[in-house]
Amino acid sequence: MNIYVHSFPCVRGIQAGRPCYIAMCPMRLVPKIFIFNEDNVPADLRAQRTLNLARVPEISAYLLDNRDDYTLSAITASVDGVVQFTPASDTGLAQSIGTLTIPMEAPILINDGQHRRAAIEQAIRENPELGHDNIPVLFFIDEGLNRSQQMFADLNKHAVRPSNSISTLYDHRDQISDLARYLAKNVEVFSRMTELEKSSLSPRSSKLFTLSAIKNASRVLLKKGKGDLIAQNERELAKSFWEEVSLQMPDWIRAKNKELSTSELRDNYIHAHGVMLQAIGLVGAELIIRKESEWQKTISQLRSIDWSRANPEWEGRAMVHGRISKATTNVALTASLIKKKLGVPLSTVERELENRFSQ
Image (cartoon, rainbow, N blue to C red; front, top):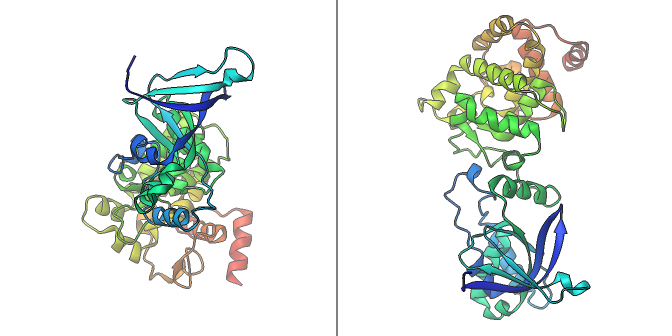
């Protein structure tokens, strides 16, 4: 047994059939025990989002300004190693109370609370007395990257929600999220140009798509609802569809090949925005029920559409007063115009929407 260990008085419990341990950890130990060094690790190979540095000073200031009246919720962490729990008694309630021993060499991954951890470190530098206070820590035994990522997704579903993109990246239960990850890796233009963490692109971003936009567009393409199953042939159909679409978008290919800046593309063209991706997904839902050769022939006409934001046909549809709109009605109106351009008949609902738009 490793003689160098961390020992915590704790309470043992069970969640979903797995043991967990809640301990009170002195704050002065938090920066030493919980190391956050994953800033340069790709998003799909870690189990937490990158630190939002703007949040850390706010939490630190809260601790310092409310020295006698602050509240910090528990940090949730996974221990990648063999732990030992020594109960205070072999019988009665004391069986669940005891000492948790963790080898110092065992990595401890924060699933929830990395901003609290960074804020504690910053606050203690200004007021060392805070180091004598405690913060509760909920320890789980690490079961691998997928489990840790799922814990991140589950913990944040009912808290201040992370971006839709990173929730999609880490949610291994949702099949639509799994489809989005599959497409982001296997459709060539997506694999090079997708932002995995954020659901909106900054003006200087080198990416062209967000993972959440791919998810939303593919959901309407396959007409799937929350919790629906996605068969393997549907995954391959979605992949074929988006590959065919990308072939008809020379500007996407130019951006992928660094021949055109993504910021210039977003500034000047509609097809560089999520609203257009979702609208094409709506159109595709009516096409992929046909023979592959037939829908591919129809999709080839995308190449002839004027995607320029200067094209007045997009006003009131993909744009409102010159600004991109992701509203449901605007997505539907955008899809209707694309259908007209491709010679695809409108549904009764779409015709009614077009009549109201024309009035």
